Image 1 (cartoon, rainbow, N blue to C red):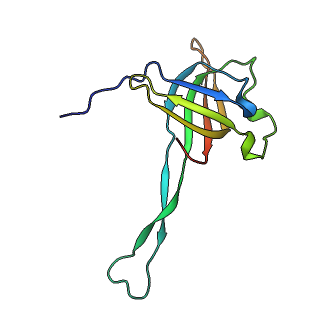
Image 2: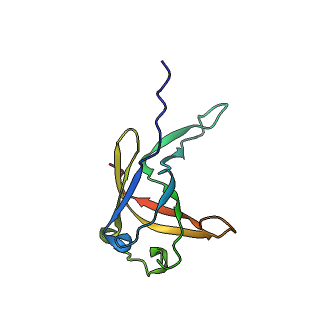
Length: 135
């Protein structure tokens, strides 16, 4: 049986703590987090025909990319000096519309790019680096 289509309408992202707690924007789309697990070369002198790899023990929680409504009067948190203490990073909760599942992780903003076009609402692309475990 084919998987049921799930609409992203109603997806929410909330920020608490860190330097993003007072910042909010209308979210247009969300992509990620883009989780990756690296590999380690395990090739040795007895390997034949092809290289051998093993999975890395730890995964990289990746980035959360979003398109948001750009509000020029509200400075994005990327402009503030970062707090280098991971205990003070923002906690981000991503609740998917349709399914209602929630993923929670810590992170900090790494990119913010505003777009301004004639006759269109201003938007911005942002990236948030996820750090630690996604639960």
